[in-house]
Image (cartoon, rainbow, N blue to C red):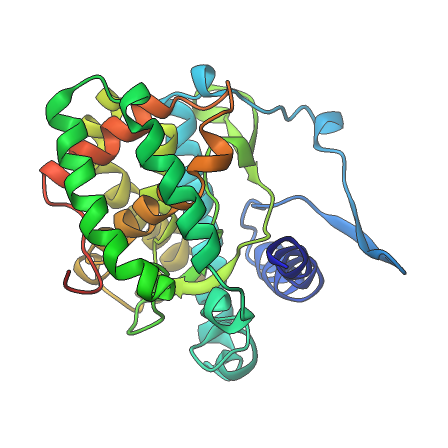
Amino acid sequence: LVSNHFCRTEVVFYGLTGPVLERVMEQYNIERVFPRAFGQKISDKGTILVMEDMTKQGFSLVDRKSFGIEQAYCVVRTLARLQAAFWIARVNFNYSLDSVLFGRESPFSDGIRKSGVDLKEILEQNTKYFFENLHKHVPSHSDRELIQELVKKLIATLVADPMKGVPAFTDEPVGISHGDLWFSNFMFKGDGGSMICRLFDWQFWDVSVFGLDLGLLMISSLSTEAMQEHVDKIPKEFYRTFKEIYESKTGNPVPFSEEAALGNMGHSLFSALFWVIVTSGTLWESANVDVSSMLANVAFAIRTKRIMFPFEF
């Protein structure tokens, strides 16, 4: 059920939302963000997306060991371009697309809640795995105790209502989120200042909190040292790039302040923590995932009180 729903969601992205954003990017000369979809083939087994081959253009995947801070900032700036296109489209249409595409009333906002997917079984299975295997990946006793204590309290609330772990679509500023922004879903070309990247695997895209993806990017993909050094710099660079592109392309000031945008980072880190828990049974067995580094980043975010919880527990 989960796989079927979110595969359909990706088809909707490339068939509806993506083309609107692509047109804005082309019109305003904004470097593209995601691969092109040439078409859709509908069969009795589902819909097949026909995508461009990024490797023929010189793009390649990176593994966890080769994903560094240079790649992270490339992703951040790419994501900022996406937000600029999203907001240009919103404003250009005088917010008239909000009810059908870009706003709270859109059927594509708050997608997990509206999907009807039952997260309780997924949460229970992965929580069991999480606690049984935590000691293998967190050698620091203090970090392990810190994570265990918080997650146990958190799970007591989430098992009763798993949707509390899904970020709510509340106030402005909003943005378009990828929903699964970790190093396995990027491709890169070039290096240094000429590096560009593409984001793919849009099964979990949503209209949600502006900057929601940043927490997951940092916790899942940065080394512990990079996380501690750049946890405040990355959101600022994200907003700076977004602001620069939006204002240079439209000649108008951005619709919201840096303070308002950065206020979402606590929600972003909470969303990342929830992702770490519900994917543990799947991703922790992968040799390409540095679980120890990821959990050290979680401990750092907890210890420094950077996570903003959407409910009391």
